[in-house]
Length: 356
Image 1 (cartoon, helix red, strand yellow):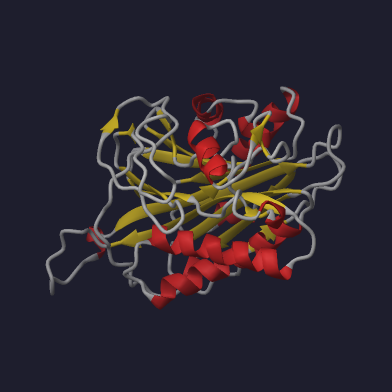
Image 2 (cartoon, rainbow, N blue to C red; image 1 turned 30 degrees about the vertical axis):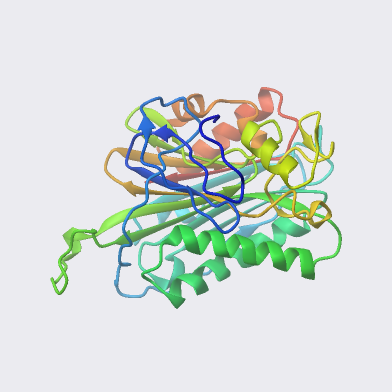
């Protein structure tokens, strides 16, 4: 991503995949808005194109069993699989999770994942998240336990608000919480999805909507190098942006903030340039996420949310190809974790697969 970079305090321009994907790179206090795009599926970016606000689905409330959050239950070197979510008859998606501490290289598990069925007490909404901790598990545990509550509260405050703005504000809120309320200097990367039903933009004022008019829309947000990939038709679409110190735009932002990039690390220490927590790095490593919005259609098959323990080993398209014929999301997640371990990852590995 090297096009049209401007000062980090001004809107930047990013070109990306020309599909039904819209995104915002939430630099401090600003959005990015540009409709230019191209059709290169290998590009790491997504189309930048603002959309009109849409209304949320006013479906009957369904009591949720509460969030399912895991913070490294796999203390040994075997897969942990959350299979309870694969047989829910009242949601259109199925969720599978696998994780591994990778005890050959890691003494502790610092990954956390969270899944909330019928998110915000709305039928068939979903919240899915992966947090990859560093310098301790405190920040990732805090996010796994609290971020979904912050997002829900902000959505309920104004249901007409663009969820990308909600996610940006929620990331900033929890970043401040971690830095003020937690001891130590831990941080975490984050990849978060909100899946919900919305009315179409072209619905006339006063027109009565029917259920057939509702569309599913996916909102994502990320900081750091945890990643979300959508498999559409036969191609992968990356819905996140890797905030690494080797990225030219992030290098320039850090340097303009007074930091140094040494050996592809912020001040020679941290490999990611955006995270939640990491108060030791102050304004150099920020919590403003890259966000996207995409309508989910019949051409969309599944999502992969995973930490860099997977993505350091396999490319987006290859990961999708590896599991595209697996029907059980738990088995798909286990397959990807196993692949990462067998091909030399030295990190904790957590993978969540959401069948759409």
